[in-house]
Length: 234
Length: 234
DNA sequence: TTATTATTAGTCAATATGACTAATAATAAA
DNA sequence: TTTATTATTAGTCATATTGACTAATAATAA
Image 1: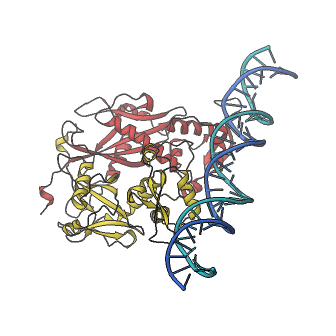
Image 2: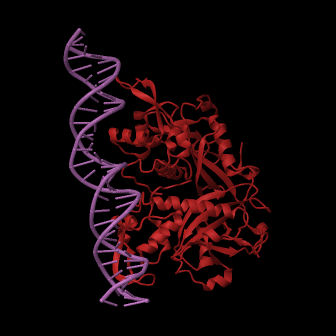
Image 3: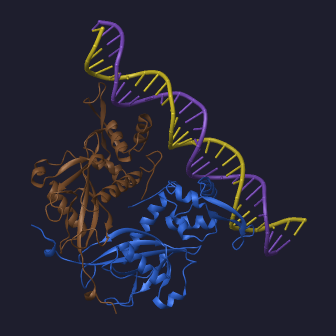
């Protein structure tokens, strides 16, 4: 008869792949690791799961500590359970990806935790299997964004269509036709055009839009097939 | 300074939601639990993760033991990490969904492990949070099947279009137009029609098809938007 | 021979798509 | 003041896809 007591116990951690978008490129929030082994090397934001908290709780706690933000969009996407992924002792890591409006992020915390934003395509080497985690998280983000309008979580309240298109292109690593993109976005009914224009990047200026929150909540699944030539590996 | 030694350690298990299809309804393979607490109650196929194996290894081992099958389609989809989900001691469970050709399943093992197939809509109450796991797995299967042709894993080598349609309808809990379904399926290039017919369920008989395996592997992502009115909650 | 019926194929109006061109609005240059 | 410039926005159009529907088919049973 199998009994609990005789079974092995393991350390369990959470690791968060934090995405941000500054209007130009998709970014990743990384920290200098604060414990041995591999201390002071670049790593994902993470920590051990405490005895009284769920893994979701742990991810939120760790994010709050490192970004100062509550209510971040967070989604568990994979457990990394190779026996030898940590050189010291077996640790299972539950990986989450997080989407945050980069403008809300308070840079003061930067110093405290030595956190830093990197363009996803120019990230440094990370410890352990964190590079794989980032790669998997990017695929998952693409996958999810193909079916759900989650990318708005990365944008400020007011955003322009060109900004939105750039974000889609960054996430999907592709280029799309502007006219067709605008037509499709407008047809979703998710956007509300404001009277104000953003003239920082053109003479004509681009209208600001905001999310139609009612539609966003009720039709969370409506953005299917927004991407042409969808390529999903997960 | 945080050190590994001072951190709490937990039991880690895997649980498998095993789907099958008998031509009529989507089914679930359940077992009578063999250890306390809740011994002899219906439960998902599962087990503890051993010290030398990954969670994927553990899931495959547990499936092999309970079904006799190797090489089952298996996909990790969520970790259940609530501190109190097991009444005796904290156990984190890594949940997998599995798709098997129900005809390959050897019923002999049925007795050894008291395993039994249930239509998903008529399953008994399960222990702990296993009911939630099944519900989540069904959503995830629907989600995945919307983008990838994985449902073929549930069918025998030779199958008919009406069978395939019934499977799609079962998984998505909907009805679809037969003509349009056939047109769309044929247009994927994934199917090869055989000369043989299945006459068991009609006078005219329905042509058998087989998978175009080359196409299946190379275009694993091409079945996007096969479902009308897609509703995905994950 | 005829009626039956699941299966398969075909029709068609409406909509969506991808590639493309034209118009617009404001600025900067002449 | 006029003109050139350019990102943004809107419009065109041939083609493909969709959903709802009807018709033809093949074998059996009456």
